[in-house]
View 1 (tube, rainbow, N blue to C red):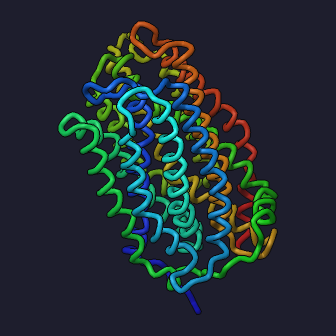
View 2 (cartoon, helix red, strand yellow):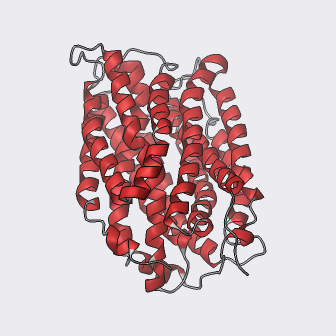
Length: 436
C-alpha cells in the first residue's frame, strides 16, 4: 500500500503530543525536587535530604533507561491493525498522567524512610510509562516525514508544542501555586497534559507511515544501533547538553528565591523570558537548518550554552554595572537563542542517522534509535540530579551558604564542553549521502 504525505493538520496534532508530555515532565523536573527537599506545604517539614532525593531519582532513571531499548524493540517489531506506534501511546497516556499526580502525594508528611520507598517505586513507574509513550511517539517522526525538509518542518511543529508545554509548565505552575497551592496546580497540569497526549491518536498511522515490523532480537538490535558511528557522535553532543541544562533547570527556583531574593512566582518570569525568545527564533532555526545544515546550527547551540551556563555562577551579584535582576533577565534571554535549536534540530538529526540503518540491517528500526538515545539520556539526567544534590549538600544551598547553587553553572558548562568537542566530528556529508 502506498503511504500518503502527512497533511498540515496531521503535523499540527502530531506536535500536540509533545506538548502533553513536555508539560507534565517539566512540572515534575522543576518542582518535585523542590517539593521534597523544602516541603512548601504549610505545616509540613522537608520530606528528605537533597542527596537522598538525587540517588532515588538516579535509580528511577536507571530503571527507565533499561526500559527504553526494551520498549523500542517491542514497538519496532509490533504488528497490529493500528500500526507500530499508536497502540503504545494509546495505552500508556492515562497511567502516565495518573502516576505524575500521585508523586505529589507522599504517604508521610515528614522525613521518613517510607517516603523514600514510595518515591523510588513511583518514579520507576513514571519514567517507564513516559518511555512507553514518548519512544513510539518519536519513532513516528521519521516515518511520517521522509525528506529532510519535511522532517525539519515536523520537528518544528513538535518543538512549538514542546515549548508551549514547557512554557505553560514553567510559567503557569508558579502562578497556579501562588493562586491555588501545589496540589491544585498538579491536577490542572495533568488534565491539560492528558488532552494534548491524546490528540495524535487522530492520525491513522497506517495511512501515512510504512509500518513494516522489524525482526531483530533485543541484543542484536541494540548492538547494531551502536555500530552507527554518526549516531553515537551525535548522541554524545546531545546528552551532554541535557545533562548540563537539567542541572540549571533543577536549580532555577533556587537561583530565583535564594540568589536573587525573589519568590516562587518570580521563577515564571525568568523561564518565560527564555522560552518566548526561543519561540520567536523557531522560524529562523527552521530556515537556517535547511540552508546550511543541521550540524552547523547544532554546533552554534552547544557553543552558546557552553559560554552562557557558567555565568549562572554570578547570579545575585552586580555585574557590568547592572542590577542582579537585570543581569538575570539578560542571561535567560540569551539562553533562549540556542534553546530554540535544541528543541528542533536533534529530532531531525536522529531521523537522518536512522536512515543509515538500511546499510546495517536492511530494516526500519526508528524506535530503537530514539530508545538507545533515551537509555543514555535518562542515565545522564539522573546523574544531573545526583550532581545537583551533592553540590547543594556539600557546598551549601542557603542564602548564608550559596556556593553549592553557584557552582551548578560552571559544572554544567564543563559537561557541554565535552559535547562540543565530540560533536564537532559529526560526519554530516556522510549521513546526507545516504537516502533510503
